Image (cartoon, rainbow, N blue to C red; front, side, top):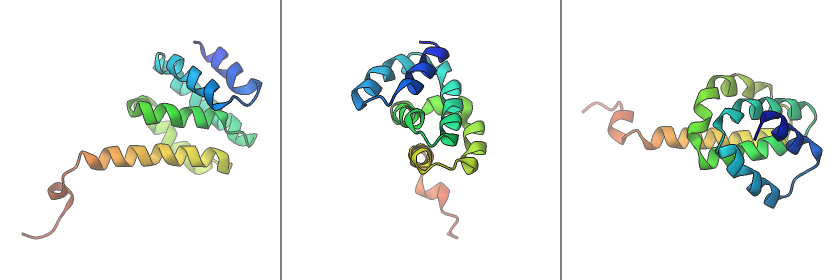
Length: 115
């Protein structure tokens, strides 16, 4: 799958859940599509559309590591999102990232209590 095909798929019409499930394996096979996908999220945010955000959220739930190459852009752009329909799936991504971070930490390393 190419970025232009992904863009066409996400902008033609509102795909169903089954359409999203069918496209996920293609995107998961091409992690280089995460950056163009995130750019589509920013475009759709301005249009109050959410399909790209929905797809992004589904991918991150399956492969959180796909967020790492674009995590800087992701974090920088979050405060500028305006559409609630886009903010919600991005919040799920933030939740997944936070949970993964803290699951790797032990209670002893997080606690700064005097012994």
